[in-house]
Length: 471
Image (cartoon, rainbow, N blue to C red):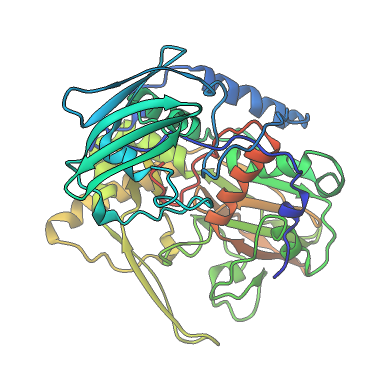
C-alpha cells in the first residue's frame, strides 16, 4: 500500500482530541444560522485566520499532548477539573459541576455506554459492550470522582456494574445545549471571496505549507497550486498527498479536452453550466483535482467558474423558505445511463437537492442539471418542485462567481460537494485546452484535515464538507 505524503509529513507532535457530541435539539427545519448570525469569538477567529491564509503567512501551530483515541478535536480551554458530582433524586442522571462553573448533565444509559472499564471498552477505543445488555431503566447507585475519572456504579435488570469514565472525556463529549450550538458555529464554513493559491514547491519544502493548503480546501472549498510540473502523473501524485485516488466510471484519472467523440459535454468546446460531478452516485466524489496540461495562447475563452452552493442554499432558505422546504422533501432524479461506451453504465439515484440534519442545517446539496432524469414523484408535487427548481436555478445565476483562467502548471483542487463548477465556452483556433483530473473520497479528506488540526494545528474542528454528516 502506498504511503501518502500527508501521513509522511505528520510530525511526532500530537494534540488533545475530543469533541461535543450531537443530540437532537429540534426537528424543525429552521437553520440556526438563517435567523441567528451573531458574532462570536469563534467566528471572529475564523475571519482572522482567513486573512492570514490569504496573505500567505504561516499558520500558528500549538503543540499539544495526545490524550485519547477520540475522533474529534478538543477545543481550547476545556481542560477543567471537576468541582462536584450530584446524582439526581430519580437516580437516572447526574450533574457534573466543573471548577469553571460549567455544568454538564449525563444520563445513566449514556454513561454506561461510554464506560471505559476493561469489559466495556478495548484500549484501542472500540466498544466491547453488548448493546442489548444496557437497559434504558438503568439507575446510578453512586458517582464519585477518583483521580482523573468519574467512577460510577449502576444497577438494572441485568445486574450491577462499576466502571469509570475519564473526566476529560466527559468534558469534551458533554451534550450541554450551548456546547452543541457552539459546535455548529465552529464547523460552518464561510464562502471564499477569492481563490487562494499556494506554490507546489512550497508545499514540498516549506514547513506548514502542506497544512495551509489542506486548510484552504476545507475552509474555503477551493485552492490552486501553481507551478506543478506538467507531467501526466502529477495530478495523481498531488492527490496522494492527501489520500488514495478514487476510481470512478471514468477510471482513476481522466482528461478533459475537446474530442471528436463527445460522449460528455466536458469533451466539447461548449460552455458548461454550474454543476457537481457524479451526483448519480450514492456517495459522489468529494475532492476534484484538475491539472492544466495545455492551454495555448490562441485559445479564446474557457475560463473556469466556481460557486459555493452551501452559501447559496442558505440564501435560498432565507429568501424562499417554502420553496427551500420543497427542495428538501421532493426528490430529483439523477442519472447516468450510457451504453455506448467501453464500460456501459446505468446509474439512477433519486434524492432531494438539499439534505438537512436534525437541526435543520444544510448538510448536503446536489445540483447537476446535465445529469437529471425525468422527475418521478406524486402528481401533487410536480408543479411545486419545478417552481422551487426554477427559482433556485435563477438564484444560482445571480451568485458571486469565482472565475479563473487556468494556465499550464496550475492545478485546482476543490470540494465537489460544496463548490459548483463549470466553464465558459471556448474556441481552440488550432490550439489545445487540456486538463487532467482525478477524484478523492470526501471522508478520507475530512479525516486528514482533522488529523492535521490535531497533530500540527490548534485542535480546531474540521469544517462541514457536504458528506451528509449531521455534525
